[in-house]
Amino acid sequence: MLSERNRQLIRALSEGRACSGNELAERLGISRAGVWKAVRQLQALGMEIHAVPGVGYRLEHPIELLEAEAIQGGLTGEAAARLRDLHIHAVVESTNTSLRDAARTGAASGSLCLAEMQTSGRGRLGRRWQSPFAGNVYMSLLWHFSSPALLEGLSLAIGALLVRVLRAAGAEGAALKWPNDIQWNERKLGGVLIELSGEINGQCAVIVGIGLNCFIPSRSMAEIDQPAAALHQIRAIRGFSRNRLVADLLNALLPALADYETEGLAAYLEEWQSYHAYHGRAVRLERGGDVIEGTIAGVTASGMLLLDGQDGVRREFSSGDIRLRAAVP
Image (cartoon, rainbow, N blue to C red):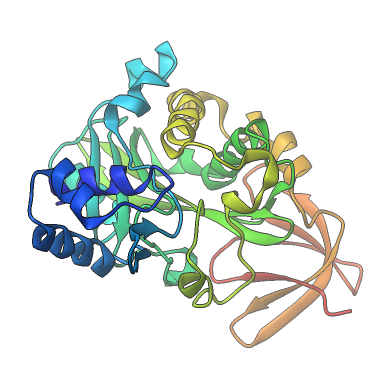
């Protein structure tokens, strides 16, 4: 739990200037020793707060905390009507795990979990998802479907919606990499992780997990095992609001999830293929110790990858444990 005092400290330091210990103590109504203790608590979460001798404390970059009121204020009428419980956590193991537990106790479709930080964020194939405090968007959305068979291609549809929102915000280079990566200039910007939480009252509970890089400290960037990007690097959308971004995502996702049982991937397939950065390109598919080379020919109506092999045979691949890589020149 992030204390109100620490929230006040973050807001003060996010004004874009250094604040002396005396000023912060007066604003927060605590002693200078209390200010030092609060700063240390935030630094323990990974926040880059610098103490400048003779000047005071300053943040490496301004931080906007997630606020339920700000998010709800940016929702359309339809999205607001479909949003149920909205929980914003300071620190969780992962938003997917938190929402999965809620689903087991009867959480409704439209329940949302957000976090400022994840201690065990996960990506595809169980890979660790770097989750620095208040730097990115970590969100999970719960929806109930009548059957798992209706979920074919859902991660692709969600990916298309994310790119649509990002491009509308100014990220013109945003694109997709099958099956569920969001890229910018062929560097990973985010991803989608769909998980089933069993059947409850005859329905299939589905958790749509989304991670988007907004600002990644250099030390976290160095720990990512592939080329990565963050929204703060995109000139056209610098200075964006995380709360506004979450609201825009919900405005797209909530109506789409409500209609997905009837529309399916077909409603997004053409859009998805137009965003796919690897369409028509020579690639390598890595599965275990096997490597399959060919040219991307699109995806099927159910979201399987179509690959024209070097032997002239077109094959279909489900995501499974396959990794897609650009062909080595």
